Image (cartoon, rainbow, N blue to C red; front, side):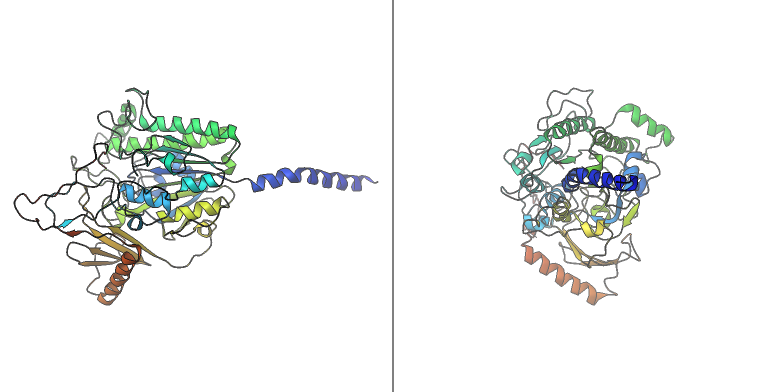
Amino acid sequence: MDRRSFIQTLAGATALASMPHAIAQSQRKPNIVFMLIDDLGWGDFGCYGSTFHETPNIDALCREGMKFTHAYAGGPVCSPSRAALMTGQAPARIHITDWIPGTLLKDRKLTDAPILNQLPAGTPTLGTEMKKLGYHTCYVGKWHLGGEGSLPENFGFDINYGGDHHGHPSWPSHYFGPFEAHNLGGYGKDDYLTEVLSDKADSFLDEAAKSGKPFFLYLAEYAVHMPLQAREKLIEKYRQKNGGKDDPDPIYAAMVETVDAAVGRLRNKLKSLGVEDNTIILLTSDNGGVRFDAKKLHPIAENGPWRAGKGFLYEGGVREPLIVYWPHVTKAGSTSDVPITGMDFMPTLLHMVGGPAAPQPCDGIDIVPVIQGAAVPKRTLYWHFPHYSGQGGMPASSMLDGDWKLIEWLEDGHLELYNLRTDPGERYPLTSTFQARALKMQAQLHAWREQIGAAMPTSNPNFGKPGGTISKKKPKSSTEE
């Protein structure tokens, strides 16, 4: 055998010997980290336009992955959007359309539609479906979809740190220990919640690496939800940066940076464990940012060019940042303007890991083709919020059909029609100019509500009468949104 033949034979043998490993690598299910930030403004990251907040780790993730400019939450407040993310079902279908257990109503024209105070037992979730596929599952952080009996461990998560009925860090310590949330005992006043959640995530990732199973980590930060609290050193950094002014808010900016630090820490951990090349990371928020705290007159979150914020069906209340990093799939620095919604994550994640179609009913679509850069069919998005919000929002339903956005206000039925291409800030309603379009969209909206069994608010017979106050009694275990 000559030298050339020998080298070719040796190369072939080497390729054959390495083939089982290559096949095993290609067949390994990817790990998933889903990171959810609470009450984040659309424009709070540098990669989404902030010039004040410092988010180098998130900006790096954005440069390496795909940035979505038209991602939407399932609802304008916490529990509905979380239910949509977890189940793939529209909040109106699953009857969790307000934060659990809901707003205390005062003298209002309508009585809020009834809601469930917990995720219904037996509902398929991302946790149950990933567990069926052999994933080691962990929930870290805010749950807010029910208390005892309706916790993450009741819905497919092997481990749960911090997930229970709490809608925000509990009084009186809030973001500094001790903490009352599930499995977060043993911490003191020097411990900061966002950092503690990173500790728990690290602990799970160490365990998952030893197990040999693929892992699914759902990291739901309590930040940047009110109250505004951060370490004083970091707050002082932003005070100096804006010359001692309170606009932009230095405490809020510090909280945004703590979330960014958590992203950096997570990625470093994945790298140290040697799994970063097989781990998909998705980062988004549950609803728009709080524009004005009741006790402050200056803005808090930055919702970009969009109108209003949390608690409203205007764009500022439902449009979210979303970054998807899928090694070897997402094109670095790519951007998508395809409208997607929180219900899409159930079918999408199942496709990503080679699983079956999403359990039915499912109101989302698989957006893997979008992530891969393909075109997708046009779709219509719907929202239903039959409640008054603590931020000033009123009962309403809405829909988005291409560039056209319709809002129907449920107190009196009046319509607002906007074209988001020409008027992204929703300042100039075109209802009277395009009345036929508005009425057609309203009929579609009504048909959708009927089809999914949406609950509606009812007239308050005591409205305007002395003592005509309605109140929802909160369960003792509940906390305000």
